[in-house]
Length: 249
Image 1 (cartoon, rainbow, N blue to C red):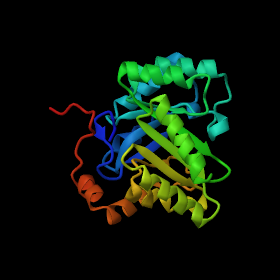
Image 2: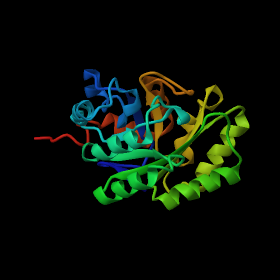
Image 3: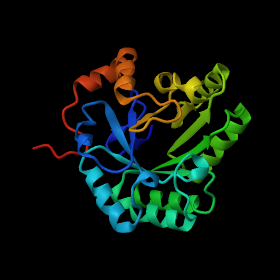
Image 4: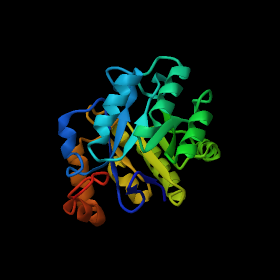
């Protein structure tokens, strides 16, 4: 199973918190149950090089491994600028993060980003967001294999659930690939239950954020459910002292 920074995935559920910009309360995020911070660059107030560098340096000092995501509007994000600029920013910040999320559909830039991640030893997540539905298993399989060919350490599949069978189909797909580094998310109100149950089927991460979207659960609620349902998660939560990237005297 892959790792992001010093956090090993696949041992028990790991919570990833998406943030747009640094705030002081993030100093408490690790003790609250967060294992990874997702720096949503497309949600930052600015995306110029100097601002990004300063903002990510602040996030890095929280001591929790960083996944950088610069999501375009076509996959549910806020970025509407050029792919060239998006690529340049991602390549410039590699030294400040532990992992990068790049979309499978970003065919103009994803190969170069993937190569840079491998060169500098950064974990590569390749993602695909189906914002309208949950495709059939053959489509999911094709997406997964394409992401693997790109060099993904982690494949992320996020699909809108229109009915309970969409959730069970996605979770079944996750379970059938659980030995190979997969994150599976059913989005929307019908899919909210997957935020808690997907780790049982092998999903490596479960997402939440400051501003909840697509059926996400609040951090406190998510951690409460995970603590009740996964004893190893609860044990880890009780024993947390210092974030994994913090220097302890």
